[in-house]
Amino acid sequence: MTSMRISQLAERSGVPATTLRFYESAGLLSADRTPAKYRMYGEDAVDRLAFIGAAKHLGLALEEIGELVGVWEAGACRDVKADLRPRISARLAEAEARTAELAAFTASLRGALAHLDALPDRAGRCDPECGFLAPAAGARSVSARAAGPVSASAAGSDTGQGPGSSASAPVPVSGGAHGGQPVDVVLSPGRRAAGEEAERWRSAPVACSLGGDGLHERTARWREAVAGATRAAVPEGLRLTLPVDRVTRVAELAAAEQECCPFFDFRLHLDGPHLHLEVRAPSDGGTLLTDLFDSAD
Image (cartoon, rainbow, N blue to C red; front, side):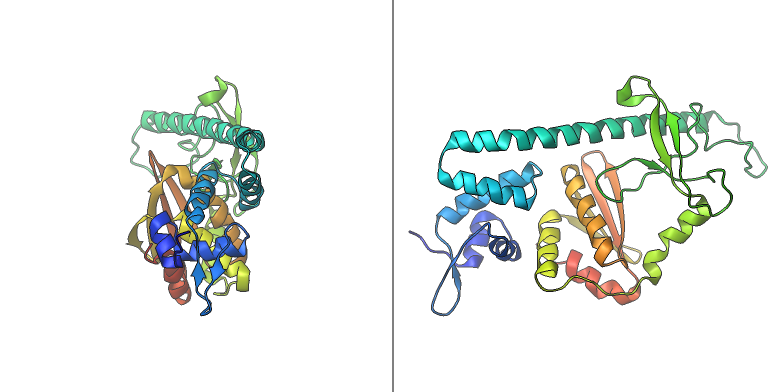
């Protein structure tokens, strides 16, 4: 049996060495050790990594992949099929629900844009009578920002509870995949409150609550999620351009990252086949940002 060092396996499989180490700690990949404690892998590791990669491409969580690998190792293809089918069906239902949400939100944006274009150009200042944040169907705003698995939210004018109100309320918009039926779009806090909330990352302590294995796992997951990204500098951070099919994984990681490292600011922009992820941090956190997101693949 051919034996490979971790660098050789990384080259053969296209999986970074940091991820290989994480897979070992998660019980997905095993390695023999030389007397000098170097990891050594057999040829079967390449097939195992291909299987893990295919499962991850389907959106399965690592815990599920671990269960599925156990079935795969037993060698009965019918058992793998039986185990995998309900998992794929569940992911498909989730994806269809997100697609419907995005279609409805896209329809609300198109309606808002048409309404805005129809307004007369006035020389005076904008006031509530303009109603440019109130499309015909009654939606009061049109801005989206991902803060977890892909969601559609509207951020803009006051919610009717006074300046700086943190309340939110659903308002109906029509169109999209729901066949013209009203769709609830959640209004975020008023502009003042939203502005204050958006600045919290600037004043958050530059410290991460993760440590040890938790930090290693999160780093490996980020490295894998943004592998191959095109990077560009933006004020106070980086913009990473990725295939749009990684949006769910990236959004989930961003939401988890803010729980342990609230000094990071994440912004996701869907642009056709591309996902643009912008990550910012205060000046004190610049080194941590670079270490996590600007490393060579």
